[in-house]
Image 1 (cartoon, helix red, strand yellow):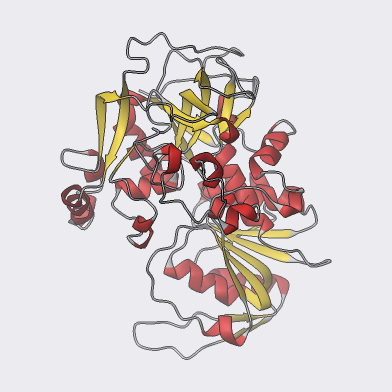
Image 2 (spheres, one colour):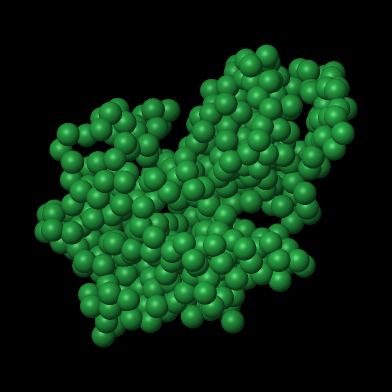
Length: 449
């Protein structure tokens, strides 16, 4: 059964009373051993969706461990033990549960046993030597990225030296952290938000006082949305943007674009009413239908000529919009949405890929002919446009100033209900879900406001 938030405000709570403190803990484990991964992947192909829940069934990728060894503080200054208060299921967690992950990126995510949960708010439980910025009992939002500085490398890589730790060039090198993954939530060494304990460096933590749990847990996805929005330089006036996909990242990208550019005309491609309603709520000016109809709608309402490529059998032509939009942010990352986005852009336009794209067959002719900029966007970090501040700092400031995130955590479950939580998150709009939360420490009351 889903749980509701404790209707009181709480600060400096949560020092562990668990008998397993620092010894063992309850944790959700993602085991991507070859046999489990192949079993889960094969089950997804069964007819009528019969295997859609295989990832959290017997023999699947996910399972609950009742007595997992607790992660240990690295033997280096600055490390902190956390007790997660609320952890959210990200789209990448859903993808992992369905064995839909990029094998290319396995070079960076080298641990075959992982504790999920990289979007979470936590309470500081224990501080190691040299910690000066937090103390036991503090509530914190978490930057999941582990770069050169946290790994203890004095000679920073080129990216970290340039102030871009979110694209660190040593993500697979453990250093003092012991973690062979770019972030928390994709390794077992330091734990993650879907366990009773996790380890982080104090430089990854943002004290939040009594900010509501349902806001603070969204710090990481909201930061990704802001990072995606900042990948684009807005022209002087009259610009138009299209965001494809009204999931959490799409909605938070719209919210960031609206806060950054109050006069920007923003459209959202949405296949259903639930996502459409939310897109309007966070700042979209217009909702577009999915597929090629999005292009014809923009042409009819804004002007612009439609050019029709030659169709081939089994491959109907998608019209090209001449005088199209300035920016497309694709928060889905499928071949269909990438293709749609490229056809929506005007010459010299910008395409930002925020969805977790994998291996797809694509026609890049328009990128060449129309001189389009195609930009990737990944984990958040310091931003030149913010004067070097991290995106997390900015969104936390906005969350105290009316940022439209309230209600995006649509469901909350206890850790023992993790299977129902993943089923709900996987259903997405069909379950009226945006972000689904898991409470791993029920003795920590959720802070409301």
